[in-house]
Length: 246
Image (cartoon, rainbow, N blue to C red):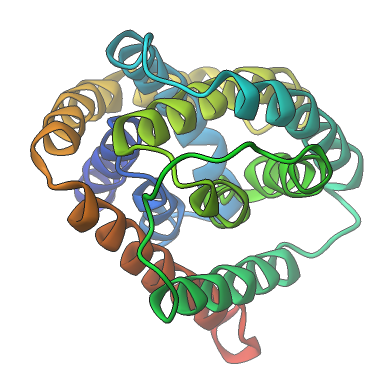
């Protein structure tokens, strides 16, 4: 059961790094079926980092510079806050809030104009706010996808630019999480050995994700992203409800 869940989780990570965002958020819940969530988050972080390297190669020329210029410093602050408040804020509360935000936003997108229109400038104010939340939630449980998409999806980026910007930003976020994760004891030699084995299916899934992004029609791609956001957000809300915690 452990290796079945671990391989499924690592493939979810790889697909997300290949350009199918929020799917990677399935990884920790899947691993939580066979181990404590915090342990699962620490085990999967090296898998995220290795998968990021493949994603960076694939999308090295496809990204929005302004979005990254806004979100990189904002997510850095968010990761720092996550490190400082990791022991004070209950993980279930953060999980529930992330789920509610993501679900409301996904439903709003479904009732408005289709995603993926002409690009428009990214705002610094909203970017600083949502970027900090993205960094914080990514640090706590690798759940930075919903707040990130709340900010980026309305910008109407082309699918490849959206995928590349997402991959590059979260590659940076995952890299800076390594030191605080180690300091908090979430990384261990044993975890690194398991992560090395899981990096193989994860890297293969990155390649598959890149291929899917290239072949999917743009409207279908963003429709799938929105539906994935909704379903995963509802799952997070469900997980945060008192009867299902612990």
